[in-house]
Amino acid sequence: MTRDPIVECDGSAFHEPMVEMKCMVDENLIHKALANPFRREILRWLKTPEEYFLRSRIDLGCGVPLNAIHARSGLSQSTVSAHLATLIDAGLLVSTRVGQWMFVMRNDEVIRAFAEQIRKEI
Image (cartoon, rainbow, N blue to C red; front, side):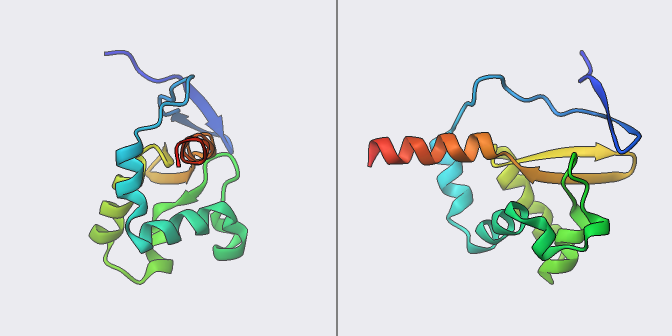
């Protein structure tokens, strides 16, 4: 098993997630992910995280820590984790581990490709 390349994020080593060079969009997974209003809200929060989270919690290179999303949501940790997993599986979010912390950020390339696909097909 090969490991992902180690990169730096604010001086902390972490393993960068595997990202396809070509933007692969699974339209059905994305539709399923976007069907839930809370998951759409998470995407809105992460579009402009400085509006929704303390600046000290945001790492521009890594995103927003999961615990900040959990705290803002008011939902249980397991519920938030399940919603985030759906967004990650659909390719709408990218997760990065830094030490003991897990960060997420939007995958704008996939979001743009999906929007373009919808624009062309519908």
